[in-house]
Length: 212
Image 1 (cartoon, rainbow, N blue to C red):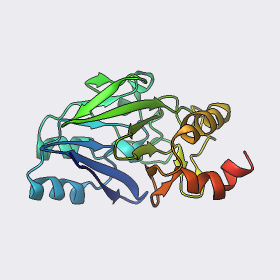
Image 2: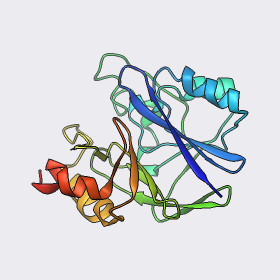
Image 3: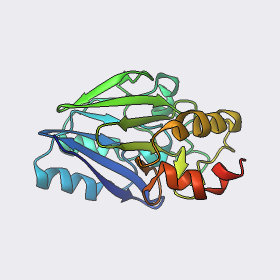
Image 4: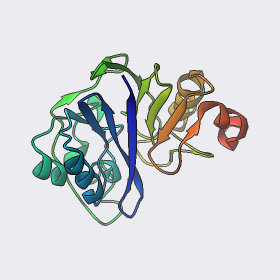
């Protein structure tokens, strides 16, 4: 069965939030500021997500959660347990530091690295990729050669690691020992900017080639 990933660049941070469909089932992965376009797409397609999966809980990835749930329904929100309090804390989700404090619905449950998630008849692997944040996770669908990686890796760049809750050492490990172990021809969908492939980043991303 075909897996389709549809990105929406939302809000002033242009956060990529993704609708993932397989058969009649779908997820939303991250839901940032100004989610109206994403909500309109779900309504037009008649899609009701079975869950919202969070790659991590920074404000630009959670700010639209409550609006989404008010329009579509009481969708379960799932994240890594290490960020269980972040949706409710402007300091942890960084909105307080930006001078625009926001909170969002707390998670209804947690995603465990190594867990397999099923969407329709597609099976996804969950990879822990801390560094940008301690609970950063990636969702990998081997059969279609696609991954959603949040703010860990971008086309030509990497996630910030200068926040109080970031770790440059963890980010180095997550990129070199987690994401760079994926197939070269795997397409990844980052939290900001265009898609790329693992092989392209291995060859041309200066942070991968030269280190950081």
